[in-house]
Image 1: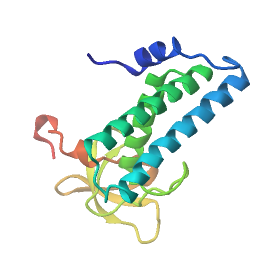
Image 2: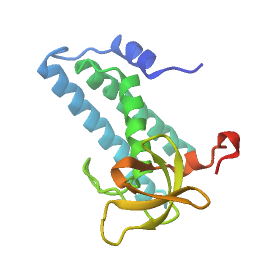
Image 3: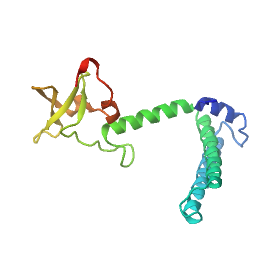
Image 4: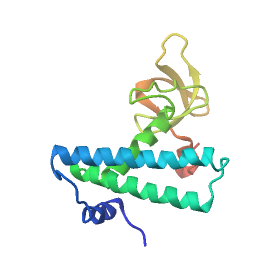
Length: 179
C-alpha cells in the first residue's frame, strides 16, 4: 500500500504528544527532535565504518531503517508546526533539483550557485520554445551564444533567452522528427 507524504503526516500527527504544540516551543521541540534523530542515523552510519568494516548487514540496515522512520516522523512534525504540507515540500524540492540539473549547478554550495556557462554542443530551449544546439560561444560577449535549430540556420542569442535542456530531457523523442 503506497502512502503519500500528506497521508503519512496526518497519521504521524495523531501520535504527536509534545510540549508547546502549535507554538514556537513546539517548533523548537520538533526541530531539536529532527536533529537528534538525524544524529542517531549518523551514529549508525559511523558504526558501519567502525564496527562493521564498511558492510551493512541486515541488523544494521534495520536499525538505520528505524532511525529513518524517526527522522521522517520529526520532519512531519516540523512541517505541521510550520503549517507546510510535505507534498509541496517534496514537489518544490524536485523542481529545484531539476532546475539545478538543467543549469549544471547540482554541485556547489548554497542557493546562489553559478550556472555552468553554455558550451558548444549543449542543447538549449529558446524563449520561443524551440530547441537548438550551441555551435559557437562569443569571445566578446560572455552571455551570447550562436545556436543552430536546423542545418544551415544559425542565430545569436543572449543566454537570458535560452536555457540548457537536461540530458534526460534530450533523450525524449521529438515530435515530427525534429532534431
